[in-house]
Length: 110
View 1 (tube, rainbow, N blue to C red):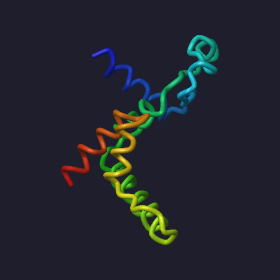
View 2: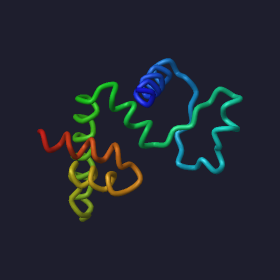
View 3: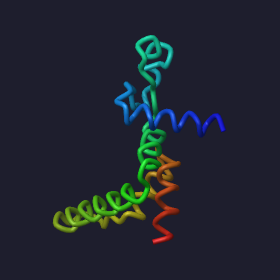
View 4: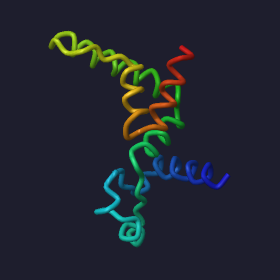
């Protein structure tokens, strides 16, 4: 429950403009140096999952719409097809596994 409680608090802080840093670079932005200034450090995967949890349906519809825009651009410029599933798979296999897996699961339902 503690992990879920922390996620809820992060979402509330985000809505209240609570200061946080979204970065993979915890080496140059260590938690210990941010904490005295009241700044929390979040990885991109945790941040996006928190935003996603605030409105999963809206997030998914926007994700699909942006994927279609990227795909239209790719088609106009002779680039490979960009589908929502392909983007989600890229995220799941890369640096945002939680977000990517959520999107893959959600896209299978639709």
